[in-house]
Amino acid sequence: EGLTLTELEAVLQNNSNSAGAVCLAAMLLHLLCAHCSATVLGYRYTSQRTVLATSLLGGCLGVALLTISALPETQEVGVKHGDLPELLIGTGVAALVFSAVGVAAALTQRPLLLAGNGVAMTLL
Image (cartoon, rainbow, N blue to C red):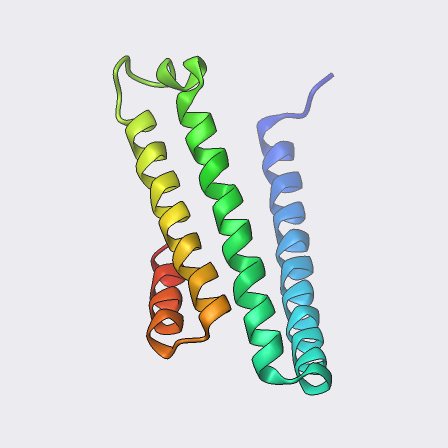
């Protein structure tokens, strides 16, 4: 009752194209909304709120990665005593550090911290 391999490939290809189009449309809508809100509220306020929201979301991602790395099931994925837990811990700690830099940059509005946050977000 399942799909054959070629049918499954066709369904996935059609859906991936549609998902890509939806993501591009959402990105353009987001840019338009960001520009409109920046025009109304001012660019400094908007950039501060954007950096703060992005940093808080990055902090949540870091906590989630650290939580996932501590689960016993993660220890058993792939090869026994593999590098997956250490990779998750390293990525989670990096996300938390970058999040702290972003929060500090958003609250203090210092150019060096804002530049550091931009580099950190690019690395993450």
